[in-house]
Amino acid sequence: MDLKVVQCVFFLVLSGLVRCSAAFVFWTALLEVSYPDPSNHTIKLYCECGVYGRNSPLEGASGRLVVPLQDSMGCGPYPVYSRNNSVPSWIALIQRGNCTFSEKINRAKDQGAAAIVVYNVEGTGNSTMHMSHPEAPGMVAVMIGHTVGLEIAKLVDRGIPVKMVIDVGSPNGLWMDTYWLYFLSIAFFFVTAASIGYFVFVSAHRIHSLRSQRNAERRLKTDAQKAIKQLEVRTVKKGDPETGADAQTCAVCIEAYKAGDVITVLTCGHIFHKACIEPWLLEKRTCPMCKCDILKALGVEDEDNKDEVSASSYPPPDVTVITVSRGEPLYEVPLTNPPTPEPQGYQQRYVNEAFEGDSQDRRG
Image 1 (cartoon, helix red, strand yellow):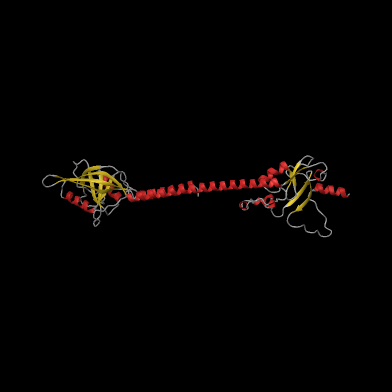
Image 2 (image 1 turned 90 degrees about the horizontal axis):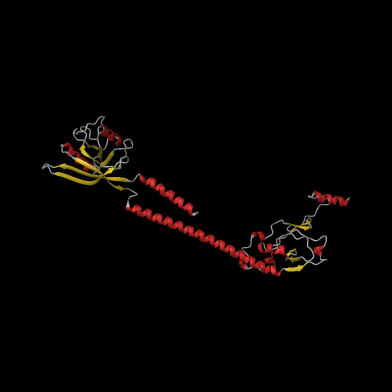
């Protein structure tokens, strides 16, 4: 697996965690509640005990708290709040239940509330929830615990003017938890370290493979040079069999041998021009005609190189050698299976029509 692939997978997983965890992030609300006591002294209470709704804007709000007259849950068709028209800004204090949060918020908004505070149902203590109200966006909506909400609602029912100031608190949830951040940091460190380690391993493996391959090629060329020095080299003279009319040509350059040409005789007996065969042997180390390995034939191959010799050094099955004389094929010699004897009366068929025509002319 490539390094880029690993990084892409990591970031895809991380982005999926972000999307899945976004729903668990919520913002608390700072509440300041003030009201006069019997001696006309102002009592102020502070707490970070509210939670903003999922669809609520993170904004502050302030005003006098007002509760519904008949339905404390604010779910009636036209809930009437015990508010004084002289109060310019007021906040609806409603108990949770009986209808959706969106319905509570919209009905309070229709009657002019600046914000809405919902306190939890009985038996939940001071616990809150991250309430959802998708059909009532754009209005500040906060939930508080049942104990706190009920105490404030009793003050309002007794006719005590209670004022509340709502302010944005701090983010909380899965992503904001300290241990979760530690976990993400450690996970990111391990993934990064694994990616770097994988990259280093792959790079080292490739460098080692290239180095081994180059060393093997260098050793094989050295062995080939040793073998070439042991081959028979002679100069063709006038009257030698190589200069006759039926003599073979060099299979590399396809040219006839002439007097004065320097030729090399391989271990298999095939001859070539010295200038033609030596570059071939340095790269291939085999006879171009019969694939005979000169390193094995001369015994100069190192033990370490035996396993590194290319598969092309071995003769493939059913190889046929074509002996060429002055550009024309003379005969074919199979290297593997011996020729099957022809049945009596069998007439030889030639694939080369020109060759067949020449043969017929000779017979005629």
